[in-house]
Image 1 (cartoon, rainbow, N blue to C red):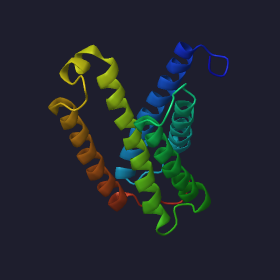
Image 2: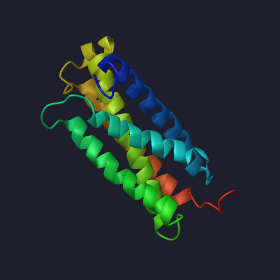
Image 3: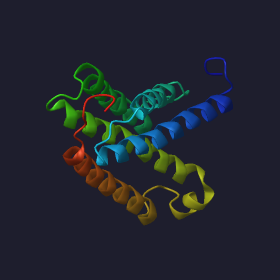
Length: 164
């Protein structure tokens, strides 16, 4: 049991939070491409933080790539929260927030890809050790897409005052 929930139930809660984080993150990032301030920022940040925090609660022994990803995500999210809520996206904090938000979303998607190749039988059959070309192509394609989106978002996102 984790926090009073059976591990299966806790896993479902964790996955639902993760999917909400990814969907709201996609909306936020694509909003940035159109230079829009979006009220979903808080939902994205909170669910992404919860995704990382709940990921640490699983009974895992020893250090894993997932724990490393979670630690990096928490650090990136701390920067995003600072840039958005304390620095109000002024000056260089605008591009810092955009970069941190895109990176946090990428890390969530990265974990989604890894978990999908582990848990979905069709994908697992294509790459059982996650070192085969299909897995690597998806990972590289995702990285290239996020770098491209991140660069575009940093250059295009120039929000007006809150509520504008």
